[in-house]
Length: 344
Ligand SMILES: [Zn+2]
Ligand SMILES: [Zn+2]
Image (cartoon, rainbow, N blue to C red; front, side, top):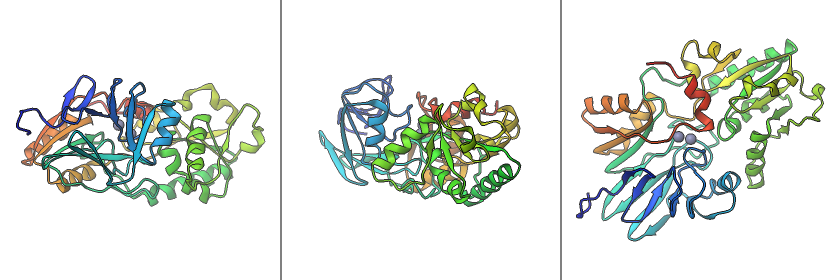
């Protein structure tokens, strides 16, 4: 703790605040200076004067928040604000997602943002960062969450799509417009079938392609798209679409939801889906634990998800931990996941 007794990062009503450097990290209200971990809507709010983020995140913020003052940096580059060193390390969650390392007079805090420890082949792979204090997410902070290897899920997905195709059905995959929708393109392209997408997904896709990302070709679904072009092929739609009239044009179709919450028995049925693919952009229980241990932090704060259970477990393991209530975890990414959450 600095000599004046104020923590390097404080939890305020606007978000995580570093008073020494006078900046916020992922604030949920408009502020002067915001450092942004990634472009999901619960972490990147509109209205701030200045945004600092990774190069990959900048075009996504421009797409979602419009014209603002943006500054972007590469991995491990340092920006100094009033003596505080700020740098970004890969979080492995989605394209451009970063952990924020904050250092002042030898004391280091790391804010994880959302992260996953397994390499998905599209987001820059997660790297643990040594620190004194680690502020971690804990979306899946219960031992029941254990992810299979991505290749296994991708195989399941491909055979499901092929079965649908052979049975004359269109495959509709529900995936978040930023993150999952790009991540599943590889197995989808593998099937050789044309891929169509909802406008929300297409816009993100185009932004990435315009910024040099080499992604498989997808087509935008418009009212003019001939039904025959789409039948027996693949549609990617954002969460929420599965229960909207927008889906009618694809009949006969089968719905597959790509989400970590699909691991919980009953959620596939509850969401009226035909298949659930347990694919998450968040760390599972083991991933969270290994991330925490690898930081070597002597103090951990846990945010969104099962933060109290996770903090309790860490405390039992001899790591000083506390839960912090934030406004994260209620974005479009998690709206479906939240409603599919088990009641505990
Ligand atoms: Zn996120
Ligand atoms: Zn989040």
